[in-house]
Length: 401
Image (cartoon, rainbow, N blue to C red):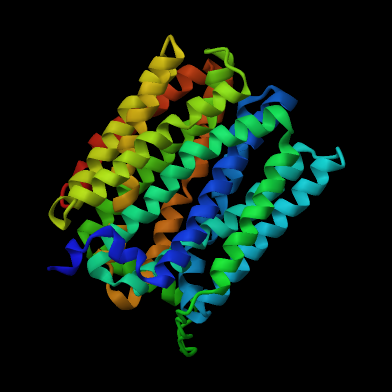
């Protein structure tokens, strides 16, 4: 049997893959727990949809600022040690926020600073943890490994927002951060148990900027990499930012409370979870590109249907299909970049991928300003239509993916 066709259980027979997957699952769960709680807290405290989008902007900003640098530096540090430090930093941030909330002194600016700090850990995920997954399972099984990894992200999007809404309504935001601390302790144990050691490349005459330039040159030489990264930019400017306004649309337009908002926000996670299962079962290297681009198209088409839905059930159905589209995009994103990159430059190109994800703050700023000007519903509609237009105008770049 071809290794690429290996059934999923064989992946989880690899102990280090299980540990890396566990770390990723917990990071994903905490991300969705905290993002919804922060959005609800900020909107209730300020009434500003713009400030709600700014919290997510600050979480993504480090990718744009430091993603390429982290990709270049990842070769110079031992990967397991780097992952342990990342988890420790995130744990410390959640602990501080839990203590501030318990003391009754938590402020919006605290959440802004914490979002930026957690964004640093997010920026390191591609060049550290996901690169380690590739080394542990091998290139032939990278597609299925990413399906499992993204599937766990999507599962967290099912349960994270629901749990966050219930905890926020019953305990308050301090309960969210306290749960985050407990989960990060489990992730820390998994990271410390890793047997894989990446080794450290000896220092060379070239500096960080030269290594980044080599990664950029690799992208410029490969039209498929260019197209893959172009799709990522479109998603992160005109697609993903709408998720920050889901609580606003749900509260103001659909008149839902925190628990119902959490349930509604989980619907895209349900769709994405089953979408990831479909990718694992049926996606083959020959159609990775179609899954990637088709997923983005479906994702963008569902945003206006959600924003203008007259009833929570219709909004939930739109988010369900939205999540299914995101599964195709997100599973294939890191997979395509990993497989298309020269092996010796993978960490650098994955760092560039983080930069392309990190352009998201432009989209969040754009969406936040639109929301203040024309309302959250129509801001989502306009952003999605702009994304579809950008996709059509860049067809020359992604047609070879």
